[in-house]
Length: 248
Ligand code: NAP
Image (cartoon, rainbow, N blue to C red; front, side, top):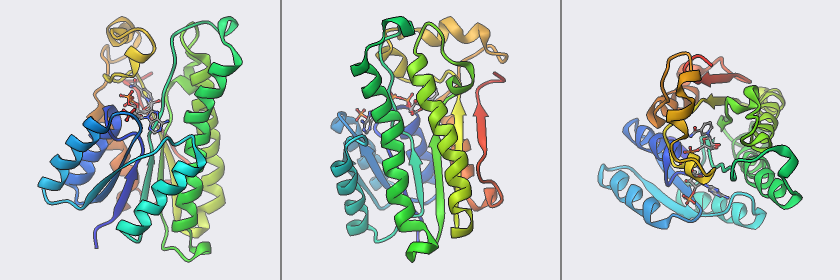
């Protein structure tokens, strides 16, 4: 039996790189996406033509009913779930905290925090031995911003990732005896489209001088850490916050 992995936000960036590496390692995959059906379908065809069992499912992870439908699709197609990669995330235009309004804060926390909680809840209900499951692994994609704070850019996003770090620590302890390992990766500045959505497509070039390694990271470098945490090679790792940030 191939292990089944759900990757949220798999249409682009770190999620897509994780999907490609997971496919190469033999996982069956559920690729979640939100708006970019075109990109998700292309990736799905690439993975299926390599011989992997895979589906692509649209769902806004911040919407409880859509999350329920996403997991129901996994139940129908695979009948099991072994790994959740809580990767879907977003940020908004760079600004100072004294400019932020409540609507923006609600959007940022809904996707980055509530979305990760809802998906983790559904995963635990399927994986936990307490619920009749066989265990599994949850990998939360946090950010080094949780440690650095993202001043003058997006403190709200950094704080949302801080919440994900706390959830990782708490949930890891809550379900450790139920066969589930919960860990997080905290990427540094990685070359994806997320920086354009903050209003600065060239952000990696600007901030790389502040990275001890002097460069931005590639999505594939984050994917390697995620796949390690998902694997049995990380069998004694739980509650870890693994920085993949070039030394930051
Ligand atoms: P990206 O290229 O902008 O891709 C974001 C992905 O998340 C897309 O697949 C998008 O789906 C999906 N998504 C956004 N909102 C969603 C929602 N409400 N429901 C479901 N999916 C949603 O970003 P990325 O850089 O790969 O980021 C992936 C993760 O890494 C995020 O959690 C991000 O915070 C984190 N991270 C990134 C960096 C970095 O420098 N790139 C650093 C630290 C942490 P659609 O395309 O279908 O809309």
